[in-house]
Length: 202
Image 1 (cartoon, rainbow, N blue to C red):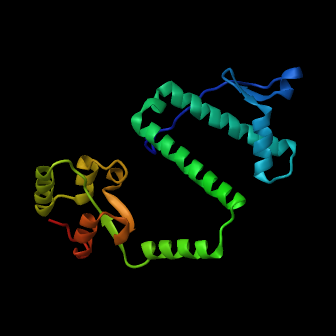
Image 2: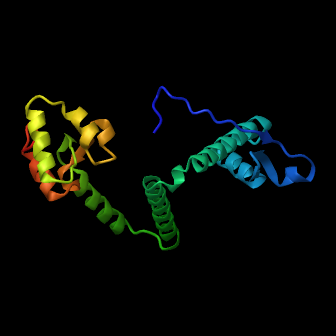
C-alpha cells in the first residue's frame, strides 16, 4: 500500500487510431488496444448525453484503468496471494448478486419471502453494538506476553500494528469498528460483552 506522502507516477503513451481502426478501437495504451465498444458502454452507463466532452472523459477513465492494470502486472502484484484472494472474493460477490438478480427476474420473490429475509437480517443486526479492537496472534504465550506489555503501559494500537496477524485490522491499530455480538464467534462475543469501556481482556 502506498503511503500518503508517496505519489505513483504512471508514464504512458496513447495513440488515437485513424481510418478503419477508429471504427474498432477507441485508444491504444502502450500497445494495448481498447475497443470502441467499451467506450460506447461506458458513455451509455454514465447516463449523460453522448457528446465529445463526455466521450473524452470516458476515454480518459478507460486509459487510467488500463494503466493501473498494466502497472499492477509490471509490479507483479496480481501474483500476490492476498491480492488474488481479494479478486476472487470480488468475483464471487458479483456472481452472487447476478444469480440473485436473475432469480428475482425469472422466478419472482413473494412478499412472504421478503418478510422472512427482513426478519432474519433484523434479528442478526439489531441490538447493542460494540466498538472493539483486537490483536490476533498464533500462540497463547504471545497473547500473554502482549497482555503483560499493555498492562505495563504499552500502547494497544501501536502493539496491534506491530504484532497483530489480522491484515484487515492491524494497520488500524486492531480496530474492528462497531460490531454486533451475534456477528462474531461465541468465544469472542462472550469476552467482549463482559468488558467495560477501555478495558482489555485477560
